[in-house]
Amino acid sequence: MHSTTWKRPFQFNPGNFLQKLPSREILLEWSTPRGDILTHLRGSVQEVVLRYTKRMRFPLFVLAMGLSCAPLQLIAQQSATPAVSKTKVIVDTDIGDDIDDAFALALAMRSPELEILGITTGWGDTELRARLVQRFLKENGATDIPIAAGAPTKSTAVFSQARWAQDGPPFQKQLDAAEFLLQQARKMPGEITLVAIGPLTNIGSAIDRDAAAFKKLKRVVLMGGSIRRGYGDLGYAPDRGPQPEYNIYSDVAAAQKLFSSGVPIFMMPLDSTQLMLDEVKRNILFSVGTPMTNSLAALYYQWAERNRTPTPTLFDAMAVTYVIQPELCPAEPFHILIDAQGFTRSSPGAPNAAACLVSDSEKFFHFLLPRLMAPASVSISVHAAKP
Ligand SMILES: [Ca+2]
Image (tube, rainbow, N blue to C red; front, side, top):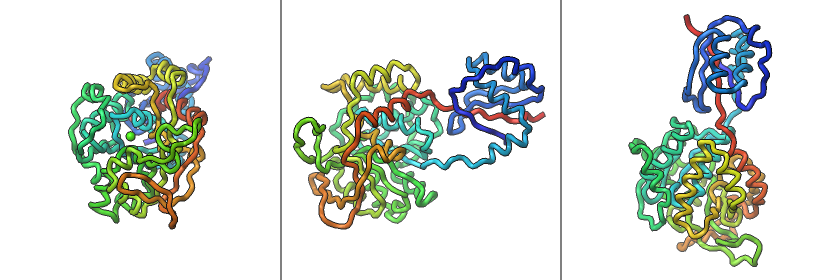
């Protein structure tokens, strides 16, 4: 298959270009970054350009056609050029209670640096969370990302986005989250970054089942813990000091297993993740009206209805950000001890984690918002049509 890839937006004035196109028959496929074919057209180069430009209202396809006029050999050479290697990630999430998981997932989906191998759901009603993820992926053209639900647990947290999840198609559980994690780690040893943005139950379960396979993960980047600052310590008033943080104290045993697993850990604690999506930023984001910002807005309003404050804190989005641009949250080594209450104390000893204690909220949002507002990237493949 000969193919090449472009990303929008392009600006191109077709001018007299159409008249110069050859009459060779081609097949044009428009697909998502993961290869879902969204649409295709077959015909001569001129026909395809005219029909596609009309259908999609984008002049950019003319550019694609321009490249298609090159000898097939050239196109083959372009497709043979190795793609920039992407960071392979699995996201383990308790999406549906607080709202920050949806923003973290959206950021991962809108980041070309990442290849999402799968999404695992943990804590509480894991199958309803998986159903939420399934709808989120469907509405944003990423239905081929595997979803694995973990074992359900008791939870006292409010599933604020349950209605949105229930309005999506039913979820058929095929994969168990812990098993999926282990399978992937065995398949791609040393390559996978696990982004953990919920209580660590699936991770504890994976370690219990096969600690050696779990150790094949490249690293775990997690939102969790509290080292010098607790909830509400934003730097304006004197800090009240560390507190047990939700993702850690919900399943202390699992967190302790992770921190003694030997897998490199990068930790985004409360100290650096209390990033407030204020009204100005929400208005900018939600007024864009793409499928992604519409999904986020719908989930946000369900969440906001159940909360006393309308301003979300995007804790989890910093964990994904760290994978893409670690300089936005520089991490330093610590020896972290997790006690029975879920405190994550820095204590003497050889480092067992790197933690980011300081971030810049404005820099974070200047990174995050343009990505969430960007249109989905598309790939255009041009093939020589078979007779
Ligand atoms: Ca979460």
